[in-house]
Image 1 (cartoon, rainbow, N blue to C red):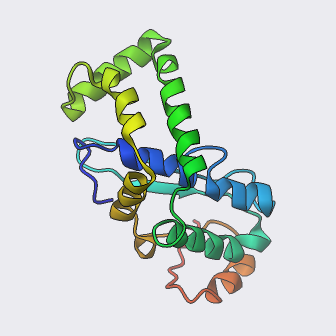
Image 2: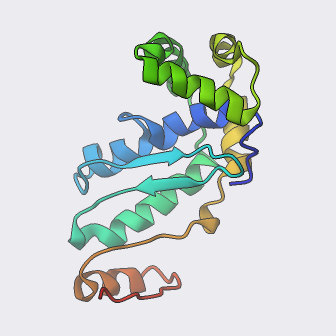
Length: 184
């Protein structure tokens, strides 16, 4: 994604909690809870030293692979165009994010990880103390802007694993370019 790992990723992270980062996120609620095609769908950014990749993991029923991929594309597109973050979603995500902050430092390993994160990303020593006020300052508009700046639904590369005889006809109907890699 076009995000600077040393920049402010909090708005995108919060927006992603609405889209794919939480159990109650849209991707999971649609494919798992509403349609029953998956045991769980999750989308998450990974903050690395020089990049911030984004991945969606969506194990789905083989007979619903094409439908699921079409649905994921629809949900992603709507999220960054016509159906951004709602007030209820914003409130839920902000409350959860603030309430989970103390639990992020329950072990010495977690504290060490936070210190390493601060060092690697060039954050101030009091970075974690600044998060609750930053979360409170996030509006729906800020969350939508963060998602729209970072996510391009047409830029995704989808990796589909499964029985090609069952899945390929479903994917052909989507009109997307397909590259097949045979298992050894």
